[in-house]
Length: 160
Figure 1 (cartoon, one colour):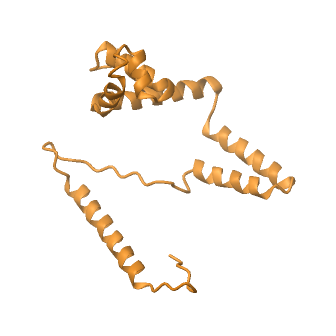
Figure 2 (tube, one colour; figure 1 turned 90 degrees about the vertical axis):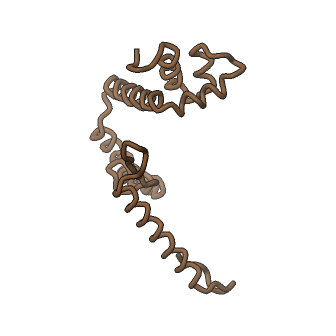
């Protein structure tokens, strides 16, 4: 059983990994159909269950990757083979997409920024988290002032 969870909670974690549907996972784990939506939502907000879901999903992905013998090098090689084939066929949009996938795979581009802020034992943010929040707020205020200062007319497109 997953450490710190009761049997029903552990079953919920395993069921949630199947389809990422909290309501259906709650039903399959044995919670009432009538309250499954609220139970599923409540379970996912439980820190121990959320951590178990992440751990369970990571383990499942690793098992699947091992079973299929998928490695980062193989994925990159497959993408490169597709890119070369696309270029040879003058399929430039496909080649561009393959290049984009290569860049994403090795971390050249990010679609979102992961900010991990920590707190002290009493729940207050640490100095690092406070400093990060201040820097983000400052950067946003500078960007907003810049946008407000740039005049916009129907003949002048916005370029920022």
